[in-house]
Amino acid sequence: MTVVTKEAAGPRSARDRLILALDFPAPAEALALASRFRGRLAWVKVGMELFTAAGPNLVSQLEDRGLKVFLDLKFHDIPNTVARAAAAATELGVAMFNVHASGGQEMMAGAVEAARSRASDLGITPPLVIAVTVLTSLDQGTLNREVGLAGGVADHVERFALAARDAGCDGVVASPREVERIKAACGPNFVTVTPGVRPLGNDAGDQRRTLTPGEALQAGSDYLVVGRPVTQAPDPAAALESILSEMEEAASHAR
Image 1 (cartoon, rainbow, N blue to C red):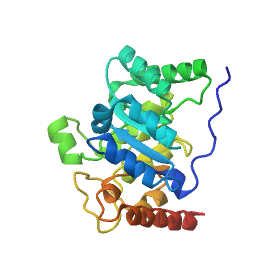
Image 2 (tube, one colour):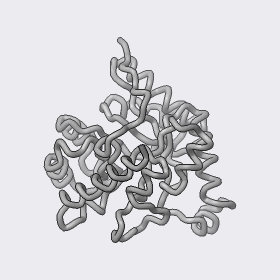
Image 3 (cartoon, rainbow, N blue to C red):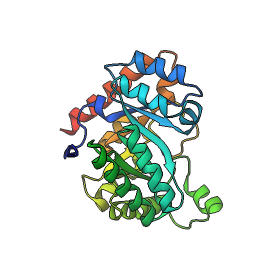
């Protein structure tokens, strides 16, 4: 069967570039919010907490609501195990999933090949395979003292991004502060998915390397991952609309 070709161009509208992180401990709240935003949202992220609590069935329920799912489980294991997990994620129909770049090129390449092979078997569009570079909760001090990696954060991000590109990944997860450097090193079509996005006036929480939605788009981010500024807002719908408006304004200035 023929695999549907991925769009060559990146996402364009604010709606297509915002990924809402459904970081909830149980499925009911996640599904309720996803249903509430139907039509205003194209993407949602399902992370470790929610996937562990709800399982694969939740992914199907979100897809039934017309949403694309970014499965954020950060696969990191021996290449064979990660390849099998990548094939399983593809069978779920997710539009994007991630692996850890620190697992090495063999592991990343195996995940890419497994996802594309399984998608070909099923006759579906292969998911975007994205590699996590350096977690946005880490700053240089933590990276140097606790993780034991010498040098600057941006240097490690670029090194991981180049390894991910060479392994065939579609892009990387990185903070918006490193996007320009990634694009310069890996090319403009290498996808950047950026958490650590915080609207003005929002608490950064456990994030260390942050920018506002407008700043992230101006830096060249392709997809912005936003969770708590919307899900924990007194009025989530108003918070979502505010972020989309800021993104649309930033995109209009960039054109």
